[in-house]
Length: 368
Ligand code: AMP
Ligand code: MG
Image (tube, rainbow, N blue to C red; front, side):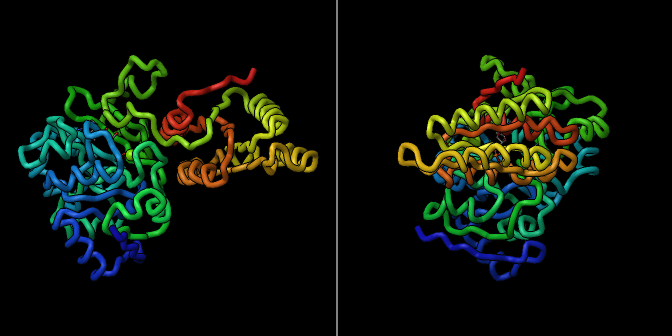
């Protein structure tokens, strides 16, 4: 299949492009599109055949449910059987926006869309292109992230094309995603709402609106026997090809230990990378210079140390925005081993570390 890539002005997409994409969706085809969180791989949520195609294009396990995207709160009634008052308060505050809510589903939502579950996840994105497309498609787009299953979520159209070119009808290119991490997921089918996936709308923001909110023990625990309730959170995810090791501890001890690891990797002829904050990049760059000037080629490889700062600790939204793209860059650079600082920042630390630890397969070393 030939994948048509169409560039749009994200704030005001060309109506003809949106109409064409909407037609593809109404006829059961697939279109990847930008949202404020990451790029989504869209199909008609009420058409079971479209949902099956989404799973096939991504190579996604079919028990991993899709999020249904709407563009008008009125449209919720057709797909959600019961919406508690606390959820309405959350919508008042953060919809349209980067938070997904789970409700008991109506019969209109096919089991193919919900991975066989009696519940449906719903999001109302704020991105103007996403909203225009949802309306053009008839109101309901099922969309997981537009990556191949297991790879980092896409934050640009180029990432989508890397994974899905030739597998879907169209990619709408609306530039880089503003947030860069997938939506927060809150389950409203329990007595007290439960966070199934941390995101840009963080625990404190939810608590302010909901009063009481729990965190699914499955997303915090390193014990593989504590299963996350969101099926998608159980799978290995976001993983770059190279092993990724997270180093935690006091900042100075972390930089010291990572510098030692970089030297060790170079001595073994490995191409190493460090994922770090803007604040510490210089100290790694000095170590990298030393390594580069010391050795030319070993084992036929060009000795390389890639120092990759992804944002300031005082502005963790930048770290969130650049994380997935940087993980993809390590693959392109054929890196052998990646060392990452832990990003325990107050606002988005929980969401960032959730993704980073999954990418690392929970390989964490404490710098002592
Ligand atoms: P993605 O859009 O690729 O980030 O994937 C959607 C996420 O939402 C996955 O982690 C799913 O397991 C989760 N999800 C979707 N629907 C439900 C549901 N009904 N119950 C629990 N988790 C859900
Ligand atoms: Mg995903």
